[in-house]
Image (cartoon, rainbow, N blue to C red; front, side, top):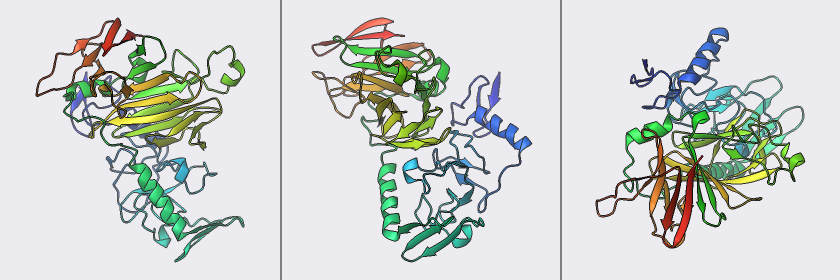
Length: 401
């Protein structure tokens, strides 16, 4: 049975979690609606509507969780933990709305974390145990006799660092958008894949030195339990590292794509770290191109984001130690292959852009799509469950899991 999306008013299958037309999250909206019946919604000052800081979609009223991308709006998750004002504070934060850009901001900060303009004094937290003074030379926070002083130059530097980092949330295109003519039907199919049913495949060099694990869809789990997690975040061989691997939770963290952003959510007991800074439990942060993600004290991975200038095509995680030849690719679109260092899969001895691997949800098969050359494109090659691909003089194995 079809249902109408309350956001775009288009019909979609009732079994889908996310609207394939606009990305509205039905499940998250139902959870929020049930919670608001039992617990009145928190009010915020300013305009009744504001864009979500993550997916940029307009939210008509304040929710604790964005109904589109499920981002947590109460835990200081507007920026990554690197730029949280009080890094040791992982308690829930109330929000105010910036009068300039209308973005929500945690109370107690002297400037908007989005537009960097100073917040009016009456917009700051007025809790009895927190006295805030904003001066021309900087901002000084006093709490329980423990001052935190930031000069204006430090605030400006933080803003510049954040602006530079935001450019890496959606990196420049690695291919031209028209290279593979990936239509809206194929995109909608990949966006609608449930995380528990994500198709998986392996693309490997003949000598086994380079292995790419392909996971179709927009989200995957990292952790210790192999039958649930798409990215085994442990050290191998398991027998030799049994004690250390026990620090990794069965489902340790969750990486997912919403709109043109990649998010990381901690679900672990022993912590997930972004550049050595721990993410609070159940907190969601934005991942940038080149970020280092650490699974407890066990394994570090480096994240790379690949786009066509319009949408995110793939997210690749590289192991930084222990079996460093293994790579995990979240394939939310065609995954380009070629002899070009900016591509997700780089192969020597072939064309700069040879093709792209993708999962066709309509045909339920993995395919190799060839690029458009002089306005023409060869038909897609449907890959067998076990197949062999030749690029230049090198042979590669492909098999479906």
